[in-house]
Image (cartoon, rainbow, N blue to C red; front, side):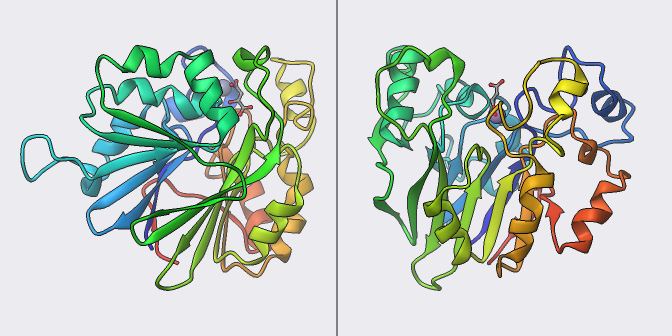
Length: 293
Ligand code: MLT
Ligand code: MN
Ligand code: ZN
């Protein structure tokens, strides 16, 4: 199995267009790294890839990775589909940027599909443009995509603000377990962890590669930054200071944080917090890396 890290930032990216915080400023001065929105691509068969979430910068992410570029043939794309872990805007707005798709399969947990179709009207808006198939991926069920199996693991009922009024039962937020059926190797992609659920723990215990929610370094960070009165936990993201010990206890050889908010000190490559992670055997996922568990 091959996984490509397409982006590592939380909503807004780094730098965020209307933000002059330290992390965004340092990324603008190109001391820090500009970061695209969190996403990975999974090779499901030779020359076929599924994206995990559709970030607002999805087409730039595709161009940045030669194996996702089109050809041979005028309109042949290796991008076969998208699997959504949740319906947050930073994970779904990219669907609209894929409107030229002749054929694209979108899989998502039922509540997420409902949010995207009823909340964002994505099927109605994209219908006249794109050949999209919308498939439910119920939590706990496994779907085969070429040489890969994917399963949505229930994590929490954190839902996007625009979907507050929808009546669908959850789970609203899932992690994706990705299994190579030939090698048995497994990866877990989990960018939004409001609760460390039992199904998530079970999958993490058997994983070879783990991507975990690294939105905030500590619980008070969003309040300190001044853009909210909520803590990280109240915003639906367990902070790294509360998850790093658990992540370090896993036997997976590759354990990475992703979905970094621009307030997270880790957006600066020189921040001492990187050493704290390294001492635990952890790191921040690097955009452009191809991981082969
Ligand atoms: C989140 O990760 O909590 C959301 O992307 C937040 C947001 O949409 O602003
Ligand atoms: Mn997000
Ligand atoms: Zn910022």
